[in-house]
Amino acid sequence: MSKVLVPLADGCEELEAVTIIDLLRRAGIEVTVAGLKPGIVKASRGVQLMPDVTLDVALQSHYDMVVLPGGMPGAAHLKADARIIELLKKMAAAGQYTAAICAAPMVLAEAGILNGKQATSYPGFLDAMPSVTVSTAAVAQDGKVLTSRGPGTAMDFALTLIEVLAGSDTRQQVEAALVRG
Image 1 (cartoon, helix red, strand yellow):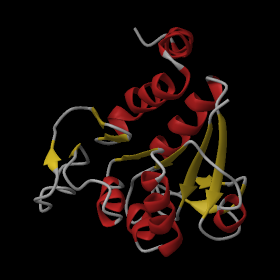
Image 2 (cartoon, helix red, strand yellow; image 1 turned 90 degrees about the vertical axis):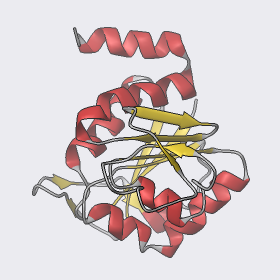
Image 3 (tube, rainbow, N blue to C red; image 1 turned 30 degrees about the vertical axis):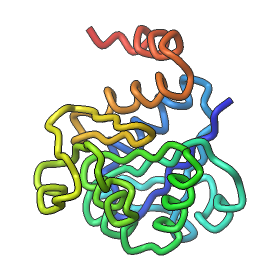
């Protein structure tokens, strides 16, 4: 079973965070939700989220993928956290998956992971980065890096993560149960 870390910071986009966590768990993927600091995380629209553990505790385990929810100032808090940047660099160097949605691809860029890659984000967050080929796709995958545009693409993003980690059959089963169409 794949293991995924979803770090949460105050000001994260709750729709993205909850959608990612929920859908990955529906697929049987082990998800650890880690707060940058102890206690409840207050998301961008006031929703309170309770992480499973602190980031310091979470960093004692191995993960197959790290997924960063966006939202502001949540993504800025992730970008400013040296532990997150170091983890992303280690994951990329080890050939593991890194993923981010909305404003959070800027965190991947800060870690140097998007250099020479195609990526997407909330409009404007990657535009000033000449080393990134900016896509307008809902979800972009370039090797082991996955990015997505925003709250409206969170479900497509999470389903793509499921497909990458657990295969297309699992993605189809989860998607069918959601009754999207």
